[in-house]
Image (cartoon, rainbow, N blue to C red; front, side, top):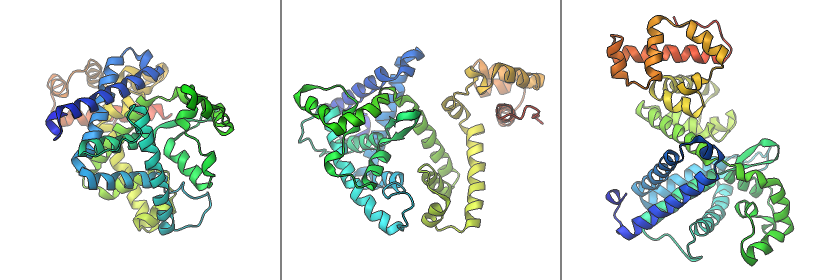
Length: 367
């Protein structure tokens, strides 16, 4: 990090330590990471993810970084800052979003101070400190809160829904604090508050939050965005950003200025690129996220795996064996006497067959 930023070694070291503490906390709380047997690997992955997020905001700079964060968070809460069924147009929603986000930034800086044990008057002043705060705010907004009935929701969405209901300020509670054990007299007093007690009873499942899954999802989305950008598909990037917020078709049409026919064409193009991304360019990343990697038999049951393998030609079985052994593509292509491009096409056929069988089309053929 020191080589990529203009800051004193002391500042960089302090930031690195905060990232390390945060990553250790996440890994300690995640039952999935603890039982994976790969704690060190997860620590490195999450630490690198946090560092890259911070460096991205640093490289964007103060002004552009603020614009991007504001834009991303605004898109996340666009449909949640008003009650369901509201007929408010984009301009009216935009004003509400501005009001809501100002309050959310104040909450985020308080959480940033508390979780990093910084003074109550700490304010980011240098470019690196500001980048760290913006990266934290983005992650804080995306934290998933488990709800009764097995559902979960991102923290910023819950806040926006509360904002929409116009909850009185005195009943607005900090979800993070509500699920933690009381620490000190102030916290004990806070815990006795009836609103906190009510929320605590509903939010105890927060301890099951698994940040590693959120990190994997973020990485898939980031790589998909990079892929779409490399293909010159900026309209698909905008569409994905809005779809991630679960906006309705009319809302997407309004924001992007599309007719229904234009949207249908965009959806078809988007689907084409997503499938190409998932089966060719980043199949390992996507399959890992879906829990359908080669070590999980591409997500197939034992019976489905047997059907899958029985449909493969001798060469396809050889490709599968070499892929499972983690041989690189150049070596595999040389072994089966084809070009790397031909290998990629043949491997994509295998993945398509596995996807078809996994989705119930057991008669699928590789062609």
